[in-house]
Amino acid sequence: MNCPICKEPMIILELNRVEIDYCPVCSGIWLDEGELELLYSIDNTESELKKLFRESSDSKEKSFKCPVCRKKMIKIRFNNTELIIDKCPVNHGLWFNKGELEKVLSAKTNQSSQKVLSLLKEMFSYNKSQEAE
Amino acid sequence: MWELIQSNRRKSLILFFGMGALLILIGYVFGSYYDPEAGGVVGVFFAIVLWVILSALSYFAGSKILLAVSGAKEVTKDVHPQLYNVVEEMKIAAGVPFFPKIYIIDDPAPNAFATGVKPENSAIAVTSGLLSTLNRYELQGVVAHEMSHIVNRDILLMTFAGVMLGVITIMSDIFFRGMYFGGGSRYRSRSSSKSSGQAQVIVMILAIILAILGPVLAQLFYFAISRKREYLADASAARLTRYPEGLANALEKIANSTHKLRSANKVTAPMYIVNPLKREGMKLADLTSTHPPISERIKILRALQQGVSYNDYQRVFEMIHGKKEKIIPDSVLKESIAVTPVIGLTNEDKDFNPIEARREANDAVMKLNDYNFINCKCGVKIKIPPDYNKPIVVCPRCGTRHQLR
Image 1 (cartoon, helix red, strand yellow):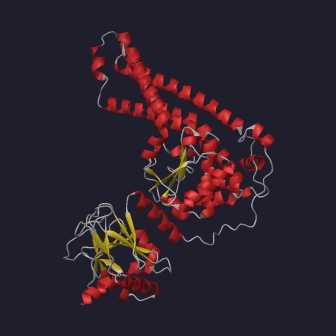
Image 2 (cartoon, one colour):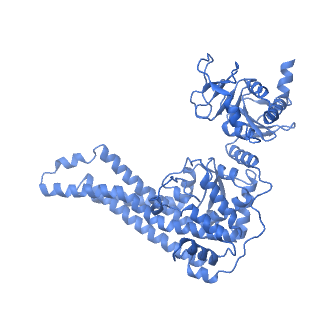
């Protein structure tokens, strides 16, 4: 699977049974539809999470193509914030630019998102320390 | 067991010649449609050549073709250890001296099939969806069902029939396309006498009827037999695992899946453990379906409480089906010895974790697609696609730089 932004092949990272597609060039993250389900299978917050996203038509961001089906992804706004995320129109998954996934998860703090958030922090701890320097 | 094999061979032969005759008839009529004088002979010649080539092909490479069409890839033990172990167990339980090749199809829809002309070079293929939804007992049931197809020599019959069916379907397809583009009209306009014109109309109607009915007829040939083979394989699977509940649950999970098998088509559909081209609410489908209704198969398996021998299966089948019908040949029933089911097994596999099963199945598919797996010492597993072209990959957790070959 290639990164929708830089078109480079993405690598897959697995830690504590959670698997994400990660672009080593732009640090973007692709979450497969099934993966998102697994992430939230711990409790049923998935539909709750979905409610927080609203389609936004006025976004000026450049649109990208879904890495699975190559259809143009739609922009969705998170919880009336400025945060805009790309979503495959036929639900293949979600694309998060660098840092976006973290913001989404830290905004919605229930147990399972806490779990996922700490996992992500863990997974990218080296990248984080590099940025700090 | 011997009679099972014998009667299967006989059926293989009848089927083989029956379909061949149908093929010649179709060839003759289609040929006559294009050219009333010499076309019939040319058509028959064409049909026979096609038949011979494809028969030979199906005998020597039929299973390879079917596996390739389904997008199946051969796996070794380290790709998916559990699947390998289950196949090994069932091989021992069935008492077969050879080891079937194991294939995985990358598809979220759970399903499985067996193929191969001789038991020595047979193969069992399962989808990644099957691996990620079934626990060990259920997987055992499915593998035992497929192993029974191999032991009962069903695969020879299924392979031949599948390829034959394919030829007839292709021929009527070509005919319809040819008619659409007006292929026959050139010759027709040349004919002048009234009687030959009439004959041509008859030939044309006959050709159209054959083009429509040919594939249906060929399928009916095959459905009746194929359905019996499914019951028989279920019976054998219950006997091999001594745990009919496992297969029953597996069938239920497969039937309830909302995914649709991508690679399945009319020709390959009958091979699968559950018909992948199921359609909701089709009552007519009972007549033309390759598989017995799945609810009935599950009901029979679940009713096998006291014993799981062939005798028990035949008895329960008649009870649920409501009429006498021989599913299992007499000599087998005569020799059938009582087999008690395993009691006290709860189907809840304690170690079964759907997330892990899914991860394992996905990993197996990635390994088959030449992904490079790196286990970083910090605990992160990095999976690198074959088209990744940089010489190193940096672990985002600990910063280790992994050299790639």
